[in-house]
Length: 255
Image 1: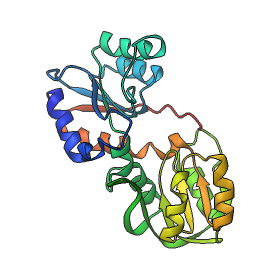
Image 2: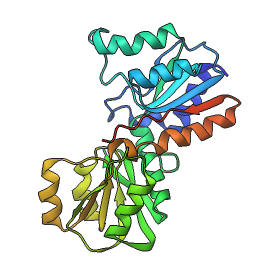
Image 3: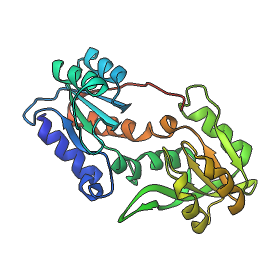
Image 4: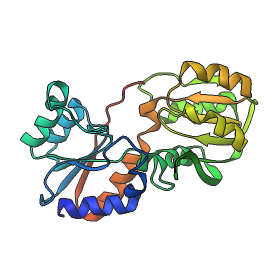
């Protein structure tokens, strides 16, 4: 498959253009010539030196990631930036990135994956950012206890051996759950307004403790990496149907 064709398919499926004005990430093809031929695609959460090296070792023609290299462009391609871009060019590995589009996609996205894990019903877009949404909310088919929900997240997510942290200021019985993966505590007030018993996200901020306590809501901090493996895994499943070889590179951070 031509690289341009593959990227066009992903951009269309993920509605990449709709996020252009709200996402600092340069989504879409970040490194690579449009005319390249793609036979093998690797998938990872982060475009880091380790995942780039593993993609090259696996013989991948393209690496698809959630966190890319360009966040508002480059002033200079030196130091760590050079150390990441050079192996891509030297090994003819293109780089495709989907940040917020892959967070908020209501079927393939990270939040949708967490909602699948929790078996949520009556789902709707959540986590507004301008005209788009980067999360999902819904109701548990069977209510969770706080400890039960924490154990579910701890055992089912790739946390790198780290425990899920809980700000346990909401009800013990949890039915309505709002999800924004990664760094999502800024949507705590929206979760309260929506009527959530719990906000599930990746990592917290100092202010979230007091905000959650004062609002009377549970917040589950399940890890940035751990909550953001779902999207790239869903894309791997999708792309595997396009007559190309795929592989997933798991490099958990524990964060």
